[in-house]
Image (cartoon, rainbow, N blue to C red; front, top):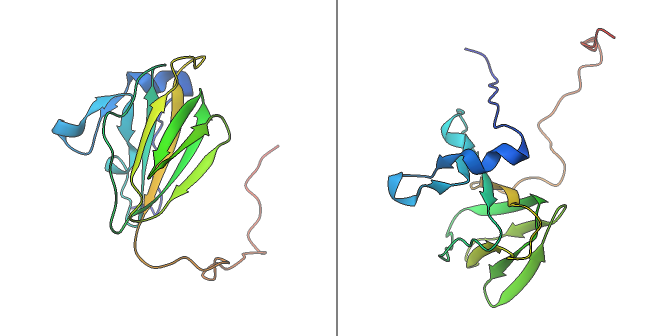
Length: 144
């Protein structure tokens, strides 16, 4: 078995066609749980798309998991405890344990609100990745 896997999640404008969730009761259009398709051990990721005016419809909080939301297109808002933060292309929000969160696509968004949610738990990451080794003797694979 190889130490890597590849899955195609499609172009941003195809994400709304996904239907998924962590289980059948939490599935919805515009969600793909990518880590259910890959053998991921320490991180998880969903690809998400909401139509203008659509919202999550619930708040949630994690006791152990930290999340990073990377917004790619559209305009929306995230509720974070008692705050509301505007989000759009290029916005990255880290949400720690114990912080309540929800989100919505603004009704006036031009196009869908699309984002990746990356989840991780476990040991704290070092400031510098201290487990890497450079391989200067390995030639670059590009044929051009």
